[in-house]
Amino acid sequence: MVLSILSHYKELNIVGIADRNSKNLGEEVLGTQVKYTWDDFQAVYDEGVPNAVLAVGGNKERKHLFNELTEIGYTIKTLVDPSALINKDAKIGVGTTICMGVKIGPLVTIGDNCIIYTGTIIDHETIIKNDCFIAPGVSIAGRVSIDNGSFIGIGCSIKEEIHIGPGALVGAGSVVIHNVDPKTKVAGIPASQLK
Image 1 (cartoon, rainbow, N blue to C red):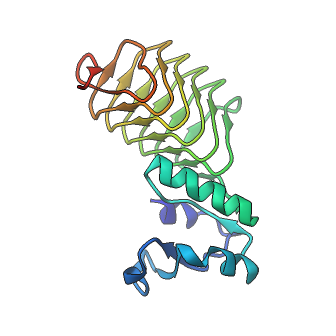
Image 2 (image 1 turned 30 degrees about the vertical axis):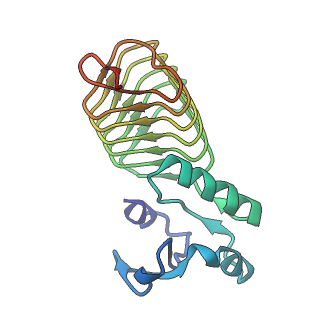
């Protein structure tokens, strides 16, 4: 998905993919070769590559990489697919990726290092903090607050004015009508805490 979005950014030269697993070296994804491992970040930066893009779904791992690459000196690029509809009053953070068909309403704030996946709708005045993953087809009503490191599963619906605590996980297809406590896993219709 990220490589597909990158194809619209003609000003960025893709030098290769860095994979966590060295056995994937030499593979190609959409015409781009896996040329590096995660141990190569400093060397690639020292060769004059100033920008990086993160394509890692796991929030903790993506946050770790974001911090590591930023510390080295990379600029983590924010990517927006051209098919996304984003209100002019919305704010999108550093290193966040907005995928195909996403709709973002007025006065929405999305933090750094988030992934907002295909077809998600985020309505007015919602705040999504840093390091979150919003899976495909999620519908988020107005004035929702989603804290750092939360994961919202595919096809979820979240009613207005809900607060989802940091590190929470909302299971696929859930309907959230009550606040979700920090580091809690919920699922179902309506969503309730998993034991």
